[in-house]
Length: 119
Image (cartoon, rainbow, N blue to C red):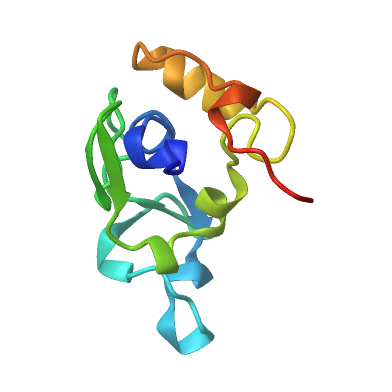
């Protein structure tokens, strides 16, 4: 069963993706490509496409929302992206996931969307 996020992408097209500027500073070990960010203030940058638009969409998102989704920089994605769990991925609903999916007309995920695990 494929991961539900691979057919979603709603969170990447709903929220501002803010991060501390150091996450995109290679000299400090930052992994996020700096050319894909824009400055918010002295301490924060955001992924392009997510900060000032009324309809945010991350520049790294390659998706047809609700059909297929991929992050072009998945191994280098910001911590903010790593912190958003899909609903029921870890046994509980995720309000962020549920809201993003509703915003794009998708149903909330349920425990049934996840294969049984031998935890």
